Image (tube, rainbow, N blue to C red; front, side, top):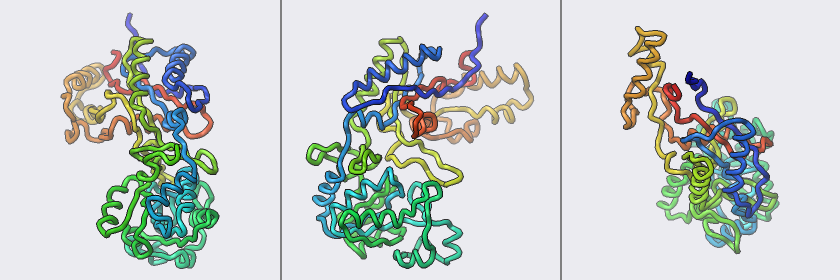
Length: 400
């Protein structure tokens, strides 16, 4: 008697050793997954997905850089006088150390913050505060003095930090003068300086285009440390984007050159298990917190490296649409058989725009799976920098 599979997608955090620079990451990851499979009693299957957090990849690569390396690159590229630093995110982990390097590479920083929130949703102000003050964020430019007069001190909902004061004090501690303004159109910074570092992540190309069209010298964070400085780490594609605080004086950069890593792990798993799995490196998931309104994606991409089977978007039917419309007159075994046939007969080309797929998620597989991984591994003390996902590519008919 055959047993029907009753479980769909399963996401498992895999406990691993504490990884250090120079470790053989591919071997250790494969060994950790196979040990977990044995101890937890699951079998490796074709189309499983093995996912590794970007932080351990970068750590094993030794992809670190000091504040002084950042400062030297900033000074070399922007001249070391007055530099506009515009639209950073509000984060001690993600940006404060980068700002320290920028400040050490300049005589003065004009810090331009977006408001009422940063790019990823960290709020300086609420919309209600703006309404009460009669401020239009689309047109009004605020000095620090006007900001304080209208809104006083505003601490982050979760961290309790007044980022305006925190960033200003940090710049001064590094020996630079500071002026802080609040504006939402890039050209405003040109009233103060034509040497600019734009720190926005997902809108960076547009910001560069706008400012360069006005004759400004502009470097995005993706262009700072995009090559090594005195032997430092670097990322040729993303520079400082995707970096995290390592120590008070250094950052861990986003990983580089890891396509071979994911393909090597795929080959090793095939050799050891006979199963073809997919492998990806993941960073921040792409989801939004409904309470704090923070969009999680502070990395430039969710997955910088992945095997070819993770290209594309889901191609799925909406089961409840079929049940409520096409097969509303059926129930029980007849309904199950009808839906199973519809799945088996669905076209291989994209169903986007077809009503039977309406409400399914037309996002890239790597973004969806990376978000699942980020939620599974967390960012604290779980000790599971590898996530093993089974059944993601299953549908209602799999295992029947």
